[in-house]
Length: 283
Image (cartoon, rainbow, N blue to C red):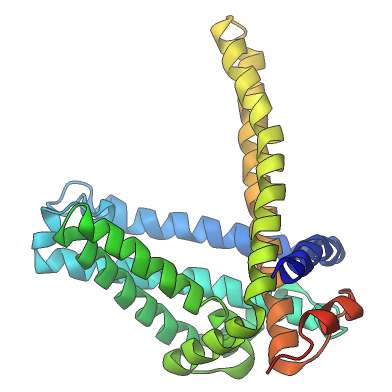
């Protein structure tokens, strides 16, 4: 187990080399985040002065109304569609690089456009699951929250490889979940190791980015407004950059694990011996 987690650590570091070759991959999570804000605004602003203003925050009183559930489902569906669309584009580009190509942003968008039916179907399934989990959570404040969190974690784990399955195999929702779970059984150690290794690096980088924010707070308290604002802006931008890079690296690792586990192909720019040893003897 520890050896497999160690393999994940190495994969997390090697994913950085891939990102250095294709810095344009950062475009996808950046645009995705911006579009998600637009989705939030497109739902939040029209509902601002309506009885459903608090539906997106999960207000239990508002959710007694069936219309509120329809609004929540629509919001989830559009939001998931945006996220999966851009994640699919990023995975497609990573797979092109792993197969020896030189991807462009256009390659990623074309791949996602070609899989719009699968992406839409998966967004609807994800929205349905999200609404069901919210319904469970609203049934009881403590027990419901615990059950929803447990079921949500299980769903997240089982669907970890859904996006690359959609991109490569163009599978439907049910088949995508089955394939995702099958691949996860082969790669759980590396996936866990890579995930926590990446989170560790993100934690360290976030600490560095937080320092200007702390310094900005002290500067503002001391009456140095210009310096304080400048430090706060630098800190916030630093945290945003860390989040952007970590999201991209996480998807690169996901694509690499999928490619080897599903096809037996060693991704270019990853250690051949590492992956062959990591997956040796698995069926």
